Length: 109
Image (tube, rainbow, N blue to C red; front, side, top):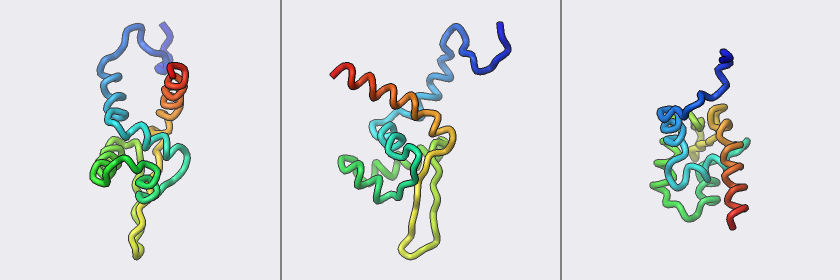
């Protein structure tokens, strides 16, 4: 067996899968990650792009994604206050997988 750590073990590691699913669980996290993509957005922009989500839920999901290390929150000491969100390198790792999920959705429609 190769010592390359990037190779997946022959059997699924349920702890790793559970850890990955904790990042994308929740109705809105996938959308937030996809919307951020390679750009930086303010809270109001995310809210405008996701009109179906309540402010409370959006704030909660953003806080959770920051705590998981998927997103970075940058607050500026300005009046009015400005807060921007962007994906971390770990968050950008999820993008190809989420794009594949989109493709699967297209195939089954």
